[in-house]
Length: 68
Image (tube, rainbow, N blue to C red; front, side, top):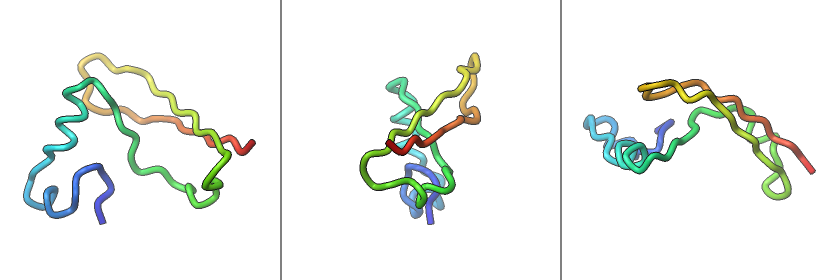
């Protein structure tokens, strides 16, 4: 099972093409979230924040789900 945005077979082959694309257009992704089964399929709001590390490639994010 892939934990990132690239398919398993690509990662096993050392190909991270999609991840490189996402980062090249100045977008970020949040991976490896836990307890998402506790969040309703509809009606919840997920708030995510993280510091922007200068010249960093990754950084821990804080994500909180709010059930309305």
